[in-house]
Image (cartoon, rainbow, N blue to C red):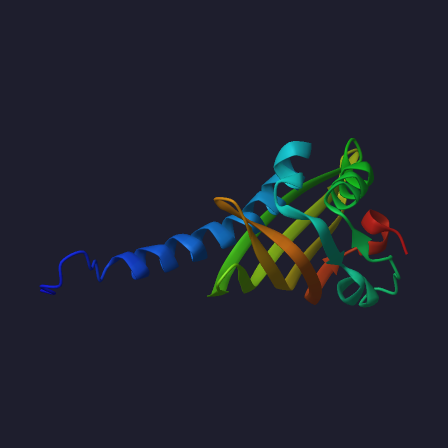
Length: 163
């Protein structure tokens, strides 16, 4: 037991665990916001000046989307692409977070199922590697930069995302 008055040896560990959990929550908000088509939840995942780069994943099936930028630009682009047209479910696995002050770096695997709403026989199931840079935003963490690279897919991504 540490006898130093006013020193709590557990506090730095608890703070680190809280930061890593809250940083991972940004990716959970991103995933669930898409699945629920919840604009506020999806937007809460991103910093105002965020960047989402889906180009490495899309290149696997020959698509060339632009980099999405800005909290609301990213949110509205995704929701306009999916709402009323594509049903999604995302599963986040293996989030690894390293915190350095008010920034963090995370890697994760995300499995994303996309089904055309009118015909669930048309689908794309993707397993993607995520690289995420985050910034502290008050009590929460937000994504500053997200890069998505595809590990594998099955189905017809071009039918979901376009060619």
